[in-house]
Amino acid sequence: MNVVLAVKKYISKMIEDTGQGMKMLLMDKETTSIVSMVYAQSEILQQQVYMFERLESMKRDPLKSLKAIVFVRPTVENVRLLSQELKSPKYGQYYLYFSHVLSKVDLKLIAESDEHEVVQDVHEFYADYIAISPHLFTININNCMKGFTWSHPLLQRTTHGVSSVLLALKKCPIIRYQHNSSMARQLAENVKLLITKEASLFDFRRTDSTPILLIIDRRNDPVTPLLNQWTYQAMVHELLGINNDRVDLSSVPGVSKDLQEVVLSSLHDQFYAENMYKNFGEIGTSIKELMEAFQEKSKGHQKVESIDDMKAFVENYPQFKKMSGTVAKHVTVVGELSRTVAVRNLLEISECEQDLVSRSEHSSALQIVRKLIRDPKTSDLDALRLVALYSLRYETHANNATTSLIDQLSSSHYDQKNSKVINALLKYGGSSSRSSDIFGSKDAISFTKKFFKGLQGVENVYTQHTPLLKDIIEQLARNRLKESEYPYLGSTTMQERAQDIIVFIVGGCTYEESMCVHTLNSANVGIRVVLGGTAIHNTSSFIEEVIHASTPSYSVRNANNI
View 1 (spheres, rainbow, N blue to C red):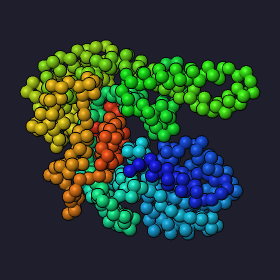
View 2: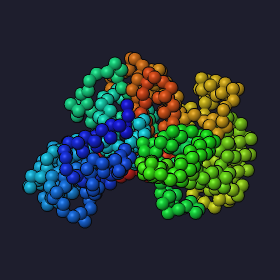
View 3: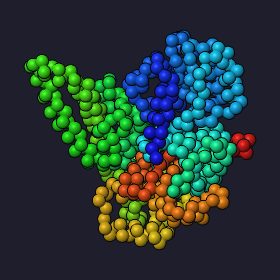
View 4: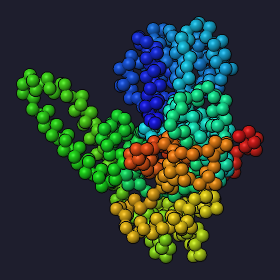
């Protein structure tokens, strides 16, 4: 199960099916992102695709010699724009590809608009999601809930995204969902309804094991998105932000113009692919080795004395230039991470975070949180996250001091939103909203695991926390996930152990959870897991999600139509 490869195959098929000749790609905003995540522009150029345009752009020049490969989502607006395009075509031939199911009504409208008979083919290629890595995808919807309910458009968009993953991977799964989440249940029902309606599309060859789609809610684990991260990919997203593999470095002191925005793609950057799951200490060593290899190669290029030397230089120059760019990019990124860690005192703050969520020592935890809030090096965001983690961890403790911490936070960091954020967080993911025991204080088995982990110690004080998702997937893989907490949708149940598992998190997932899935896939030959979420969160985006979710719900009319 590889969500990146599935999209790449679709794009390659589009290009191949148009045959020889000069081509251009006509896309919408979302499909532009879908394509750019799996294909570098240079790769597509090699396949006679010489132009990339947006369907909504009105400034395109007519080029009748070009074949237009149109890849768009089947939205009302795109169908309208495409109909206008076909009535006055700018290109010689059109090959139409939709990222999900196109209705018969829309197909008829497009056919009627093709007055010049320029449309050669119409296909549905199910790439209606953003593929981040082979096991990770997102729908790129931030703030998917309001008043803890779906809006109809976002529910429909998410349904299309999840179902397109199933179609791309050729899976017709048994569906399970988190029982205390109405949003997880609604999404599960919508996906099931679509599978039933489009039964012929989901009629795949039977396999030895029936795949499982598990839909869960971010509210069940509000802790994971609040933690500082120490592996490369997760750390970059937490401290700098990753948006469709792009990282904005324009605010980095002294950064050169060509490094103000960089791309971190595991498909096109070997160093990143090899180091994205390594911890920060290991990255330092890897950067040193990369620099040494580059310096060694540079010495070889300095010696150009003979014709053979010149020939070798010309042959190796593209690789040398690429290596030079890789070195500059990662040295800049790691340098900024290192500077941020020092400026914001993140080692001490992260240790406190990990102790808060992994241990149960209220008095000492409270003292350390108070001390760090007072520290002038502690940023507003880090102070807020410490109080947020404390409020979740000790919500029901007899000596809970959340109110006084909020007062201290407000006086030290001068943000009137602090109280609103903490109250919203407790409403979003407090003990009354969760079905899980994320701190291992109630369940005897969880408590025992935590006790023995404490006795054995941990390899790294900054990675004591384990996301709830890891335990859920392990239980599901053993067919031991409680049906009372994660019921089946419909009468079909799983008798054997699951092998192909697709987990989708309403409210967004994290790169820490992605690394857990990567580790599980690498360590277990018997199972294959794909993770998806409405978004990929860091602390800042998650706090926005919490505030948005806690505001009054969408209109009653919309709520009734979901």
